[in-house]
Length: 126
Image (cartoon, rainbow, N blue to C red; front, side, top):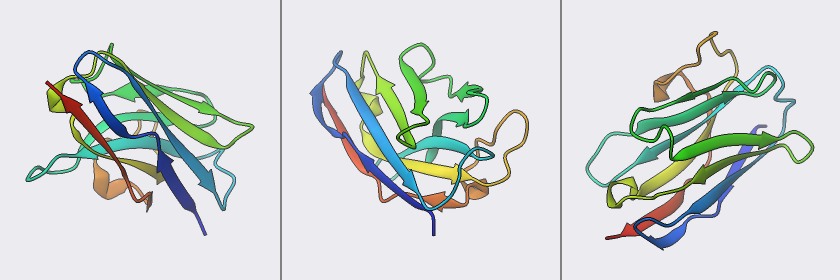
């Protein structure tokens, strides 16, 4: 049973930083892709960033490229999202997700991810 548990969310002022963590368990994730999505109130869930666990290949949404960095710690089976220069519009519930069979360039559609965490809230005050 795959389990994904996010942590690290909170309230931060615009321009500040946060680091989200996603502790993954239940499988060997070497063939998986892991991703972060977010969902703001009254909006659809949107792709933020993804990483192929084995190679470290990454993909980012245009809205966060250059500000957010996805990374992983193999020993801890943990995925991270370092968020810098946060903006009010980054406010959302952030989810960690896992894709069992990722394509070469990684999926950005939430419907293609197989496992999800419960989410962690990020609130950026302006």
